[in-house]
Structures are given as structure tokens and as C-alpha cells.
Amino acid sequence: MPYTNEEGGRLNNFAQEPKIYQAEPPTNEQKRNYIFLGLAATVLVAGLIFVAFSVSNVS
Image (cartoon, rainbow, N blue to C red; front, side, top):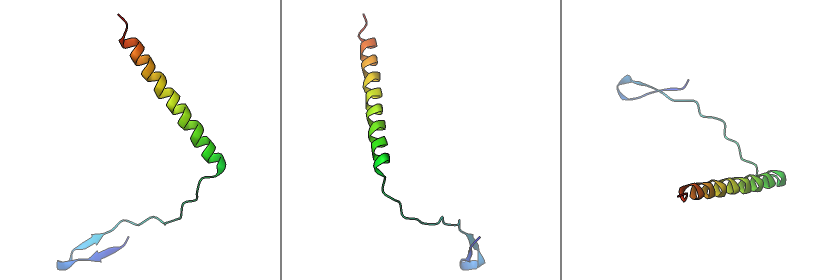
């Protein structure tokens, strides 16, 4: 582990930094999956809102 000496003889311990890499853009298949998951999430949220309103208006 890398140590540095500060004023007064104190040691300071630093964490190891992870290796840096460049991210790759998503493939066409990944883009298609993102769209599908976004639509599924939208339908789920809309359905939950519909159920919440229909249950709350029961007299």
C-alpha cells in the first residue's frame, strides 16, 4: 500500500486506485433491450397508477 509522510512524521495511507478503461458504446442489441425494458417499466408504472386510482375511488 502506498504511504506518504506528512509534516510531523505522520504516515498517510491511500487506497489503491482501480484501473481506468474506456467504456464502449452499446450495441444495437443492447439498445433494443433498453427500449424493451423502458416500455415494460412504463407499462408497469401506468398499471400501478391505474390500480391505485381505481381502488381509491371505491365507495
